Length: 70
Image (tube, rainbow, N blue to C red; front, side, top):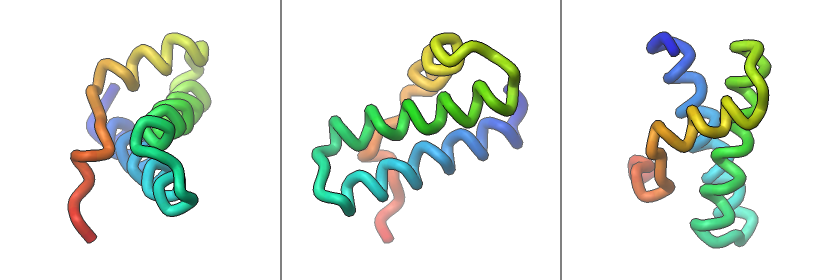
């Protein structure tokens, strides 16, 4: 994955996490939603199967606690 695509995937993850937390979900649920959203983006942009994209996102080791305070 090139750096541009990685940046887009990370942005999607964190935006989804923020939306989920703002909707009252736990950080765990927000993380799961972030992984799913980022995997959907990656699979559509990279023409890969969803499960493969999901494994790629999980390997990035993104966490809600990595968000910069706003």
